[in-house]
Length: 197
Image 1 (cartoon, helix red, strand yellow):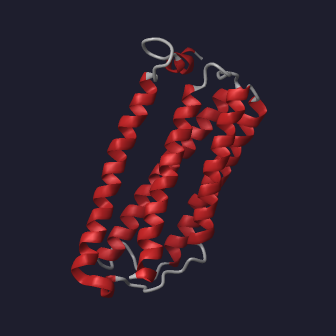
Image 2 (image 1 turned 135 degrees about the vertical axis):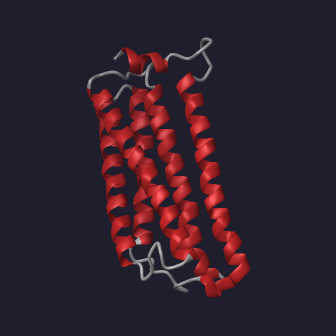
């Protein structure tokens, strides 16, 4: 318990962010830069070759659109968990974390089906290479988020959080929101842009 609670105590007194929070900000900044570099590579090649570079002019939204909605709903459920913890409603927090975990897991499983349905592969050219690298990198982040959610659920279940001490939950939720925002950029790039180009 002390490891979890220790991070929840702000450095330098009331009104300041914890060390864990600033660690998350640093992590998000570096990971956002990495995604930006990968997406820059995609857009750079697209500008060079134009729409002929797309292996499919209208990528199927059959799995991708509902999957995107699932991930967006998961942002609402983790926000619900945060609100529950701030109000001292541990059951609400546990329910929100559990729902977020299940929605994230569903997203991951559907994404694997999406990979399998693609008419190209990692080795079929630069487009396939970038698609599988970027979406795979995002899936790795979702997996890390699921591990964090599982830990948060267990810690919440054990009573490590209360209305005053719940910074780890806030940090986990902020990371989850980051994963969702990144997916919106990936979704636009691979699923909507070819339809607009």
